[in-house]
Amino acid sequence: MDTRSLETLIITALKEDIGSGDHSSLATIPAHKKGKAVLKIKQAGMLAGMDVARKIFELVEPNAVFKAFKQDGELMQVGENAFEVEATIHTILTCERLVLNCMQRMSGIATLTNSYVQLLEGYSTKLLDTRKTTPNFRLLEKEAVRIGGGTNHRFGLYDMMMLKDNHIDYAGGIVNAIELAHNYALQQNPQLKIEVETRTLADVAVVCEIGKGKVFRIMLDNFSPSQLTEALQLINHQFETEASGGINQHTIIDYAKTGVDYVSVGGLIHQAQSVDLSLKAVLA
Image (cartoon, rainbow, N blue to C red; front, side, top):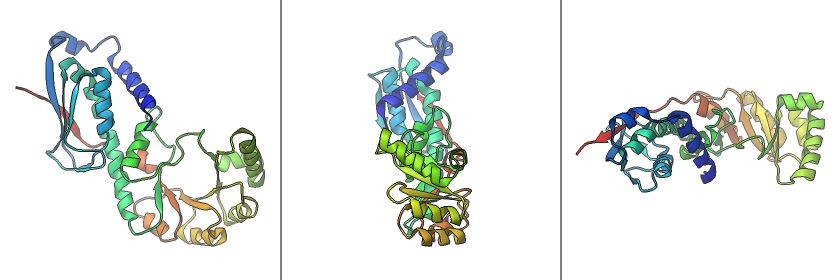
């Protein structure tokens, strides 16, 4: 996870929350009074966001003492403690909600992702996330997928070319879209990989015919498992393959059985439910 991007996210989020000041804390707690708090786990799942929490406290107060009892990617049970932090009470209270928002959300995504990953055990198919993320929170959502055992797809529009249905239609067809994208990559950035969405077996046949040396992955969108099997026979390992479109925990094994390289599931992020955690004061 990029440190500078994380710091920017934290600073922006704190600015949004603090505004003109944390007046509740300013009014009731002496500015330099020290305190201690512990993160309590109130729901079972997979823990994510420990490194983020540490960074939040240390960015606000570099001398804060953060003691981890668990690590990102560990399973957690009700009643366990994840970490303890010692800092000025103002820092603890100012950071509390941001820490919880990040860790609850990330742990929910990691937990859901890991449930998919467990279903794929024994198959060669790998699990991908998508760009169906929360604006300005993608960094942590994709990190949570990684912690949960999933694989990150492209981060944004800049690190891979994906020719989806609208690109293809606007460009005048799949052949034209591939040629334009390939020429653009040669001129602008030869390292840019090109993935092409296909909607029919006829589309797959076209990509197989003209895509060699240009396309690295074929997305098979809204193919049934039987249609996917036919498509994979046409592709015959000439390109990486990705199945996409409405795949869920009830159907993912049927897709994995086909031998497709990747399955992408947008729901890893947008359908995940936050895990219940709380930050509680430790009193002497």
